[in-house]
Structures are given as C-alpha cells and as structure tokens.
Amino acid sequence: MKSATALLALCTGISHQEANSFSATHHQPTIKPIKTTISSTQLYEQPINLNQLLGTASPATMQNYNLPRDTIADGLSAQIITRLNKAVDDTRETTEIILVPKNTEDHFIDTFRVEIPIPLDSPGLGIELLELEGGREDGLGIVIVNDLVPGGNSQRALDEKTAAQETIMYGDSISAAELILRRSGSTTEDRTDLLSARTECLGYDSTVGALGGLLSKLSDEDGGSNIVDATMILTIRRLRRRPQLQVKLYYPPSQDLPPETIKLLPGDNLRMAMLQKGVKLNDPLAQRYDGKPTGSGNCGSGGLCRTCAVSVMRGGELLSPQKANEKKMLEDTPRWRLACKSWVGYEMKEGEISIQVNPRQW
Image (cartoon, rainbow, N blue to C red; front, top):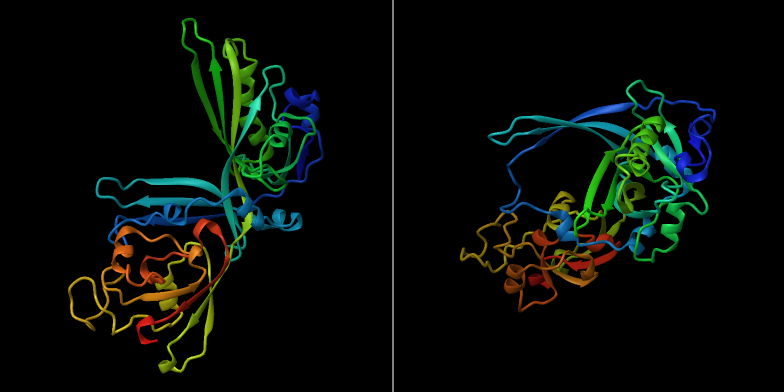
C-alpha cells in the first residue's frame, strides 16, 4: 500500500518527493475482462429509465447503506468492460475500466459529486490517499481516500455542508475531477474554463499526477493569469450495501396458500420478480382495458390488460409512482397497482411491502 498525508505540496507544505517517499507494498489487481452488448431491442414498448422511475435518493437515506471500514478495503475490485453497440449504423467497441464490488449480491458502487472551492492562495485538495492495489506498468490500480487533512480545503468545504449533501469519507474512490476556473475578461464579460481528468482505477502515482495536473493550472504562469475563483468538482464512487425490500404476499382464501415473503432489491420489477419466484400472478378473472375478452391472456407487461393487478396494503410509498395511464385504469380501486408497472425501492428506500395477490378473488 502507498499513502501520503496530502495530495500535493500545494496543500500542506510537504514536498512532492516527501509525499511519495512513504514505504509501499504494491499489490497488482486482477482485472477481469467482460463483454456486454447494448442492443436496440427493448423488453418493453418504451425504454425503461430506472433512475427516473426510482426518483432521487436523499444523502440522508444513502448514509444508511455505508459499510464498516474493515469491509471496504477488501470489497473493491476493477473490471475491464467492453461494450458492443449493435445499432444499425454503429458496430464500434468501447472499453473502460471501472470500480466494482467483489460481492455484487450484497454490495453496489454508488456515484455522486462533491464540490470543493479552491482558494487561489492555497490551491490544493487536502486529501490523504491510500493505494490498495497498484505497481502495474500501465498505471492501473485502486486508490481510496484514507482521510481528510485537518484544515485543508476539502475539510473546510465539507464542514459547511448540510445533512442534505454528500461528504467524503474513508474508502471513497475519486473517479473523475473537473476544475472550473472563472477568469476576469479583458472586456466586460468573465470567461469560464473547464478542465477535467478521469482517475477511476488508476494507481497512486497516476491519480496524483492527474489531479496535480489540474491544480497546477492555478499556478501556471500562462494558465493562471486572470483567475477570479476556482472550484474542483470530484466524482466520488463509494462501496455501499444494497438496500433490501421484503414483499409479503397474501393469497386469496380460495387458493389455501400461506403468506410468503420474497426479498427484492431496488429496481426490481414487481411482476417479473413474482413470476420468477413461481407466484401465480396473472388473474384470469381480470377485466381487460384493451378491449379483448376476459381470460384471453396477458399483454406481456404492456400495462393494458390488468391481469397482474395487486392490492397494496402497506408500503405503497416504496413503489415507483403511477403514471397517467395506470391511474386512469385503476381509478376505481386506489389501492391497486399494475405489477408490471411497479418497480420497488422508490428513492432507494428499504422496508416492507404487503400486497394481496389476485385481488378480484378476495
């Protein structure tokens, strides 16, 4: 491992040589290549945007999913992702290296941004970095935040943040950085410059070099002239545990089945999850909305037949909100939801959802 008590001499006064003179034991990360395919074929009539369906999670909610320190260092890995675009006019491959959890079942990588004002008389970040994996000739590795330098720019900026804003903590990985420079123009208007660097899955030296290259513009004789203020925006990636939702299913008395609970994750579609668990969801007694006769089958998640309707007795706030069409179809039964149009984990919250299956049979 390699660490330094500051990111750059610009922040704390130690020399760059001193900052890199700490003893280091390099561990070369095993980077697994993966190929995925992006296809124009959709499972639904309209493309599904989970970020839009699940809404915006508050930082206060996301703090509930932070992991203990001793879990983070051993829980990170790196993967090479090659994406194949199968669009008619584009067959190019794009490759990138991303930070991933080793335990994908229980953990995920969250991404957010943190804004840090950079005083012109103290142009540094004040972040202590820790290299978990590195020593590769290609400069790849895994570097995390070990601590914030007391009194440094990052610490001062985060001290002023509210509970509604994310902070930087141990185990965070800096994925990218943007330096915004506002300059006074020779005329009446100011000019804004944007400089950026990608640092995801780089080793310590490469990370410091990339971030230091941005900050050096503040003191560059040519680039540093006429700067009025500077702000660094860091893209942070954090290992967190996955929220879990317990969906308790109650069956009609005529089916003589005991209640059961299935565990789902945010973003799971209620209909697909229930069918995969073997739940007999589609109700042959459902009155269809698409004009087809009762008992003529389901519409395949089109939201037209109402055969997958369920009655939500508790936890409705944990489901994605209804769209206009679903509201219209179920306006006479306000507790009902179309399972095919319901995604669990709204705003990334966890909890319990209780539903009645085949509500027309109760």
